[in-house]
Image 1 (cartoon, rainbow, N blue to C red):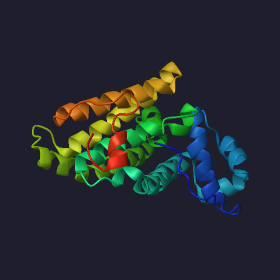
Image 2 (cartoon, rainbow, N blue to C red; image 1 turned 30 degrees about the vertical axis):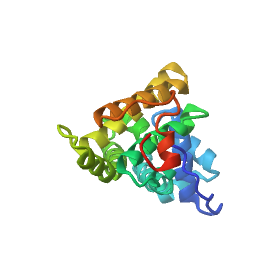
Image 3 (cartoon, one colour; image 1 turned 180 degrees about the vertical axis):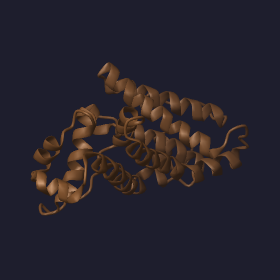
Image 4 (cartoon, rainbow, N blue to C red; image 1 turned 60 degrees about the vertical axis):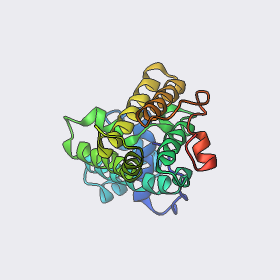
Length: 224
């Protein structure tokens, strides 16, 4: 998921600044390697302020996952992939949009929830559960469009919920591959394959060049 482009909070809002610091620092360094001192320094707050808002680093991790879910929900709600009239076009436009925002530093486009869940799923179950809620919650937002597209095109054998989760499985794997290879192009490649898979599943031709798949859906409001 991308870094949300929301208005910066007032400098006096220490809690929001700590959550933003967690969002950026943990994606860059990981949860274990990020210290309370790192977060206080990045947020320009004192340790006393940190512990005023969060009783522990784990509590901060749980709150950061919820903050991530809230801010990215607003980001995706305003994204252009909702515009096409055809539901399959919206699904393809979503994939194209996710591909288009894979740029810059890997830490800037990777997912905080996925980063933390992979690292702490056995050591901090409260954080794991908060990350799971964020990731599965986003997947659920795709289900209405996928379900409508399946009904319209007669696709059976899979459920809208399972295909929605699969899109997130590909995205999270794409982020891991980009990190492993230190190359964002590996993540974009994975989204190109996801586009091809969805087109094949729905019986639509594979058109365009890598990086252009699904772009026509954004522009024209219909499946290319």
